Image (cartoon, rainbow, N blue to C red; front, side, top):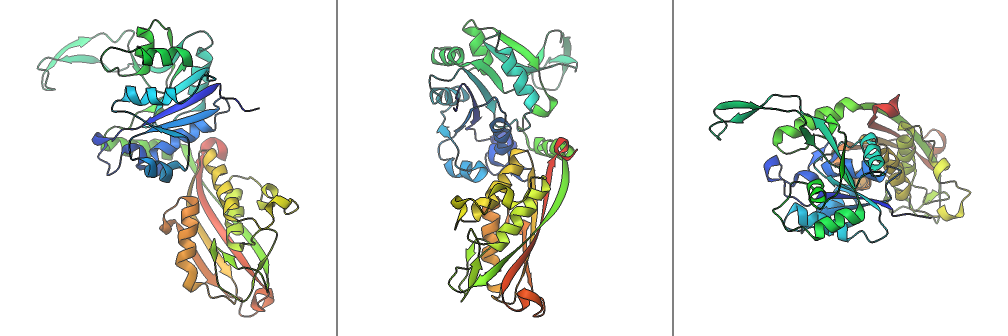
Length: 388
């Protein structure tokens, strides 16, 4: 049975005015995906988290869908506190634990989540914290121009997110808050009498705030990823009376491809290439032709399943190269439509998809017009631990 005992809220309602981005920073690209997508995937794939809710700003529905698809979300308020409360109110009474995370901290590890949830066995809340290492000093002129005396850093920490809480405790703290706008949820729980544990934070959880932070985040991400490439190959027979689907596009022709699904040889080859990059078998492993539920199925769902397996592992799809081998139909008139459809299915830019076509000089089954073959190559980046 499914459980909603542990939920996560991602606060993504801000405008990111200081980031220098043309769009709110949570939707800006980072490593080929939106900033928000990184933390959303980390929370969604953690086995202890049953549900993830994204809190967005008014009018950000399209940006959210473009970034991570059609996911559970609520609209936030004018302040971070009001946005968090909107997310908490949306969860329901069956929730026991909740993690509250800022979308601007994209690199969330499973180890941090584990530590936070373990701490809730004995505390009302838990926060990741990093001890201060730099010398702290006052600004005598209060203008950033004149050095004053130092401040002891003993017992001081930098507090990060996600912050984890027993759900009834943090919900009550938000509902009953009457003070100034708080900087985080843990201080609200403390003010209500709750005990909040410190657990080891992670330097990878640095917050993206200013333009330079994007370059630093890109560098941190790149250091954790390794490039992989794999190929896929597929063949289907041409028969009278069948529809011809190629690259997710219905092409007018006197024959169509025959197969258990819609027989889209192009999407099948790309699917196998993507599965190969993470050593996840082939298309028949995931969608057996012996299973009647896939009879006549749209091959787009096969492709998107393969892509989701990569992103669920923290991977990034960089490039797709497809070669179609046939005498007819002519691929040229349909190349752009196929490229755009494949890019849309994989959430890529059109320039990340290459489509070529060739013939076999009338040799073999493709040369005789009996079928169409497709060969694809996929290039991805995956976390170092997956590559080991």
